Structures are given as C-alpha cells and as structure tokens.
Image 1 (cartoon, one colour):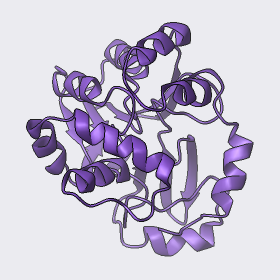
Image 2 (cartoon, one colour):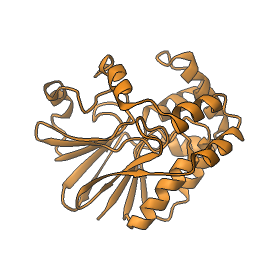
Image 3 (cartoon, one colour):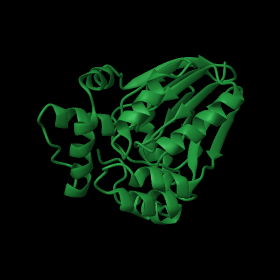
Image 4 (cartoon, one colour):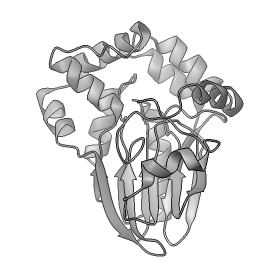
Length: 249
C-alpha cells in the first residue's frame, strides 16, 4: 500500500489541487490529511474538494481545526495573537453546520500499516498534542519522552511547515511539510510513503493562485499571497524562530 500524507493546507486550494494531481499520478491507495486544512483563504472550497475525493481519505485534526471549532462554540483562543484570531473568526464564518460536524469528528491520530514500514502513526504536531513544536535540529534527547510508548517504528507529523526525515531514538520521524504554506521554497510540499519515504514538492502557477485568493474576502489576502505564495520565509529564518518555542505547547 502507498499512502500520501498531506498536511497544513490552510485553505490554499490552488496548492491542494496541484498536490492532488501529483497524488493521482502516483496512484496512492490512501490519503492521510494530517490537520490544518484551515484556517485560510478558501476553507469551504478546500473541504469540499477533499470530501469529494475518489481515493480513500483519512482525516486527523490539527490545532487550526481546534481553534476554528472553539470559535464556532463561542470561545476565542487566548494563545493566538490578534492577527491569527482575525483569520480564525473569518474562517469560522465560512463553514456550514455540516462542515462543523465533519471537522468535529476527526480524531487526533491515525494508525495504519504501510509496506516497508509496518505500522505508521500519523499525528499533527506530536503524538501527545496538536501544537508542540520541534524541528530537524531539536536535540533527540529532548524528544525521547515525546515519542516513548508510541509503539510504531515510524511517526508522520506536520505543523511546522518544513519537511524532514530523522531518527528519535528507535523511531523514524518524518515531517510531511505544508501543502499551502511551506517555509523555504515556493510551491506545495507533501509526503509519499511505501515502500520508501519520498518527500515530494509540487509546483503550480503562483500568479493565477494569487488572483484566485484576491477574489475571496479573506481579510489578509495580500499578506498571504506575499508571505506564503510568492516569497515564503526561509527555512533558516523559521528554524531560529521555532528554536525559541521548542516543545512548549
């Protein structure tokens, strides 16, 4: 079985469409959508696209979904800055009651057996919560307690929008990267598993994507286009930022 892992779409439908085209060409047997489909500029459209897929798809929840569901329940996150809270409010307003029901049913983790690996655990950030930060540079000794007891030789995560493939003790930890908001190179990152680990990168027409996002009423459309489509932050820049927030949920 070959499994495609797509994480951190953040409502970027053009990026999602490009990745799904690649996935179809690869002939994946299962798609795991690893959280943070939203918030973002085209949340309803992205959900509609994912829910209509012919390929079997398993969803897990990320901190983005948690924030939007909390907003729909009338609870604003005290941990998000106002800039982020603005897009959470807007995204919540775009979702139907059916969207809310579907998102609320997504589990925190998912396990499946994949050829060449055995059982693989999929989580959003870490196996124990959806918001912890770690990178390819985080010391393995600090991560050992996080991955103790997972009972899987491979763990797939996302959340930090940067791909990597590393060992933590005896556990192979692979970050699928971000479809909609990758750090480093413009485009869309995803992961193909079975029988090997393949860190994939898809390209798409960024100018046309920018036009489509401008046609939405997303409150931070121009910033999203500039910062996430045309000129994403460098990996070096984000590693420095994340270093200060490592393992602080």
